[in-house]
Length: 323
Image (cartoon, rainbow, N blue to C red; front, side, top):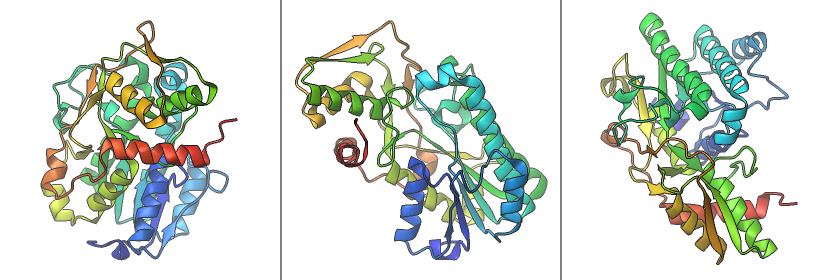
């Protein structure tokens, strides 16, 4: 399955989300003829019988499992039951139904929050389950760990070619810019944009500004996903092992939240004060992925952070309702 056109009938679960929509764009740019998508109104992935019926009738060869309930620190902290339940339902239903329907290859997309709150940096794939998780997003992380282990279990028991990719913090077109539920980069873009529009003299940023984060443009994530799923079975599985089968996807460098805020202020044209609120949670002190496995498999990102933020800000300004 070396080229997109040879992936057969491809189902992208979660095609309306940031990652799923980027994967669809990438596949179509590369000439993939059969990309199957379903909205939540057409197919609720939390409903087991519906998912089984869908897979049974579609003759799908390849699955990108990008569907998930996602959110920032605030949303994860306030709705842990929703995050663990919905994500477990989605991935369990899709992975099991894919297996039953004879899907040849599946890529499960997780999150770097699977790693311990305090882990050696950069975090290698082997750091999984070596320490306590960050409390604010523990429920989401546990669900994603379960997804990795499901893919590993199906390979060990059935020989399924079900792979896993763990992206770092993503941003880009179709991101969520809602201040109540978004991640840090889109939330800051929205905050600084509103400050410029209203003429505000200051912008409040959660936490101390000291935590460090790695950011990858979603179009780079889509390219990495297509690269990983197109690798031959022999090449992919020779780079991992059955008990640590996921591959980190990142850019290999990070910035502090304070540095990110300064960058976003520059992109949006904000010239006021940035005020940090240390009474609000910082989250994990640092999250930088070791991407040596991915690099050894022949992939590297192409979009630098400053350019990516500028492009994302233009997209937000054109598409996001700021009313």
